Length: 171
Image (cartoon, rainbow, N blue to C red; front, side, top):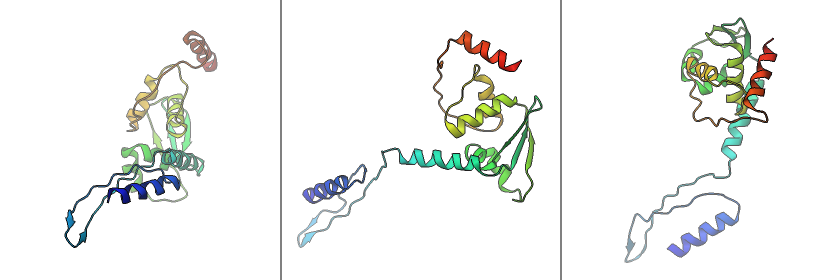
């Protein structure tokens, strides 16, 4: 039986199916023959799931916007409820009961425009550049978004240069 399992597995791996294989024998050999029940655990390890999800979120971000966020500093951010609802159980619960029509949902949020822009970049593209991550974390918290573990690092410039660039962009 183990020879048959091994050759089956080798055929599947060589045919391009990338899967983790585990067979468990649940029945013993019978005197009249071999009765074997197996279970398989298949795992896609080549990253296709992540690529599919990332491309889906990007496509949703390009759909017509149906959510207007009014920020504490008077900014207006038009976005898509599907993108934010994917990441926020709170927004998903709010949006699921609303009728889908041509009008947009308008929500006032106690978050700066730049923080929400960075948060949307983070959840759609997986990366956002900012000099202070606390407002982005606060924005995620207010919107009920768990952004998980973040890798934080400097990009191309010293912290002082980044701060000066950010100050100049605000003026």
